[in-house]
Length: 281
View 1: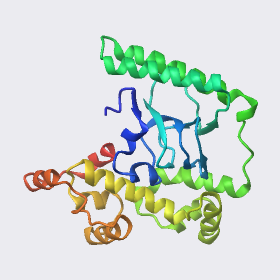
View 2: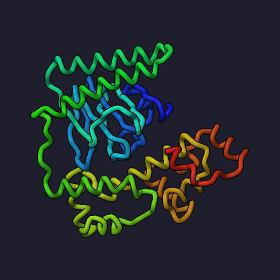
View 3: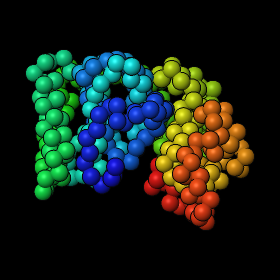
């Protein structure tokens, strides 16, 4: 998938056979609109964990930390919108529970028309797709403006969890300890851990670990960058420590997460510099 083009996929295509792709806390370099049409699950978004159900619309801005655990019966569509698009989009993450059947049908119809345009590959298809997604943006902003979708005021603990979630995408490759994040937020590591746990069901360390594991698995499974370069990029002091970390948190070593084709490619080429790793995540 090109990150410079609009793209619509099914929830099944996004998850594939790897639930970790959505289930681990991570951020993406593009905006994403999820439209869930069946099933239930859980979502971590904006530093809070909530239930997820049928006819829920979720907008995740680029570089916002989130995780989705869809149930086995979940179905939905995912609209991928490149960062820097001229489309007018919300400036923050939003989770909307849409109850009006006519409003539900509006978004479903917009997505279906856009999918047909995408599948036909006609001339100017990207221009047409952009027009359809622009209407989805209008739909989304109209719903956000409704009183029923005004966000509930956050508690002090939820605001702290939100700020911590905003720090992770900027710093997870640094190898910084929890004390670094606590200092940034002017709290103790113990208070940060307890507060994030209350808001998300996971400790602050859990969220940070998940983001690192997600990045590592993505790079290991989709690129041929040597594991030692990936380890350095993610702030590990040594390749050996990176291997132990992945065995503990992913259940497999870096080499086990590689495909046979990747292993062959790596053996045939010189190591790549780490400065291109960010774009591959």
